[in-house]
Length: 300
Image 1 (tube, one colour):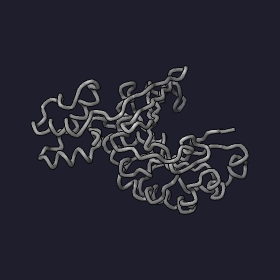
Image 2 (cartoon, one colour):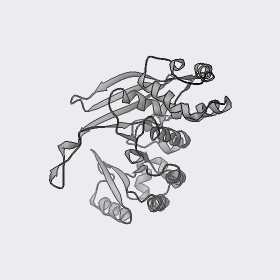
Image 3 (cartoon, one colour):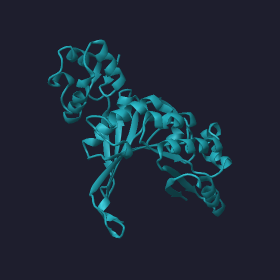
Image 4 (tube, one colour):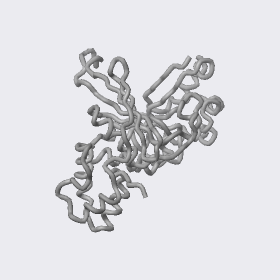
C-alpha cells in the first residue's frame, strides 16, 4: 500500500494509539516535517523507539510534490501546481497584499505584508457550475486531510501564510470529514492559525452547513450565491436543484444565529443573466435579514 501523509491525523493517531505511543509527540513530528523538507521521519529527534519503524513503514513527510510555481508580473500572486501521489494535480494560490496601502477611519492602517492561501479540497468537482473551470472537469477524487494540509506546507515554504480560504478546486463541504480534520490541524500546533483567519466557501450544501459551526466554531463561511432566485441559480449552478434557495437561506439564518458571525456572499455578475437592476433589488430583499459581507466579480 502507498505510504500515507504524516498529516493524515486520524490515521497517525490511530496507529500511535495501537502502538501505545502518546499523541503528544505528533505536533513535534509535524513541525519537523515542515521545517526539514529534505529529511526523513526517522530523523525526528526524541521520539519513543517504537515510533520510528511505524513512521518509516507507513508514513511520508509529504506524499505530494510541488510540480511548478508561476508568479504574476507584479509578484503579488503565485500559483502552485501540486502533484499528488496518485498522479493527479491540484492548484493552490498564494495572494499577497499590503494592509498599509489602505486607510481606516481616515488614518493609515497598521500592519504590513499579508499572505492568503487559496486551497483545493478535491480533484475536480461534482457541482458543474457553468462559470467555473473546475466544474467542467467532473469529479475525480477527494483529497485526504493530509493532502489538503500539504498545500499549506508547500505554500509556507514560499510565504508566511496568515489566512486560508477554501476556494480552490472542489466543493469543500462534499469532502466534509477530511475538511474538518485538515482545519483542526491548521488551528493546532504547529500551524496555529486562528479559525477567524480561515474561510470555507460552499455552493450551499445544507446538511453540512447545519453541522459546520458545531464542528468548527469561529470559522468563516462563504456562500457561492450568484443569483437571487432559484431558477437562475439552477441555470448557472445545476447542483442548486438539490439545495432550494429558501431552505438554504433558512440554514444560513440558523448558522448565523449560532455563530454570531457575518456570512460572506459571493456573486459573479454574468452579462445578461444575473446583473440587471431587478436582480440587485431581489438580492437585497433576499439578504435583508442576514449580516453579510460581499464578494463580487464581473464576467462580461
